[in-house]
Length: 218
Image 1 (cartoon, rainbow, N blue to C red):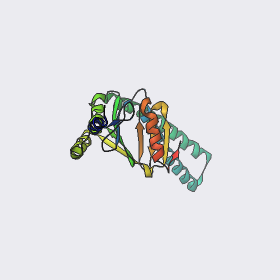
Image 2 (cartoon, rainbow, N blue to C red):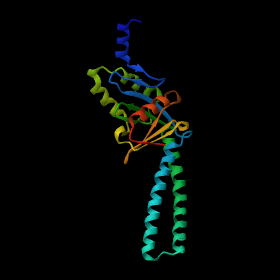
Image 3 (cartoon, rainbow, N blue to C red):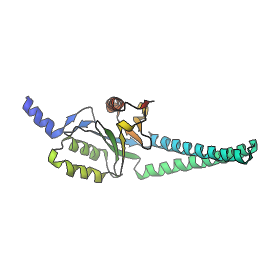
Image 4 (tube, rainbow, N blue to C red):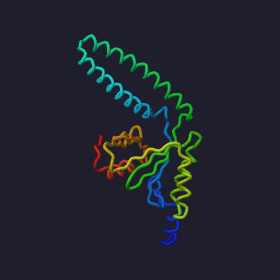
C-alpha cells in the first residue's frame, strides 16, 4: 500500500496500538474490557479495604474517648469484641451484596477506557452491553472525523452509567496488580481502577507510569 492510501486508512480507522487498544484520530487511546466479577474479585477487595479503614478510624476515635473517660483494659477488650462482631457481620453482608450485584450484571462488568496525555477515564457501561458492542464503540471512536466529534462524544456519554477520571498530575499512588489485570490509579479523593488484558497490560502500565511522575509506585 502506498503512503497516500495508508494516510487515508489511518484517517478513517485510527491506529491499532496493541491487540485491543486503538488510538483515535483525536490522539486518545481507547479500549474495552470485560471484567469477570467471580474470577477477579478485585472490586470486592477494594470495598473491604474501604470498610477496614472506616472501622479502624471509628475504633481509634472510641479508644481516644475512653482515654478521657478513664481507660481500662476491660473497656478496650469490650470495644475490640464489639468491632470484631460488627466486622464479621459486614463481611458476610458485603459478600452477599457483591454476589447479588454480580448476578444482576450477568457476572460481567463492561468497561470502556479513554487515555490521553492528561488523564485516564473509566466508563462503566450498562449491564445489557456485550463485549462486541463495547469494542464497536472503540473502533467507532478510533475513526472519528473532526466534524462528528461532538455528536459521538454525546453518544458515548449517554451510553455510560458511571465514570471515574484520574488526572495524571494529581495522582498520588499507582499500584500494579498484573495477575488481576488491574492498575490502581489513586488521587487524594478519587480512587480509580484501570483494567487491561495481558496483551495490552504492559503498554497501559508503562504509559501511566510515564505520566504519573509525582506518584508513589507500589
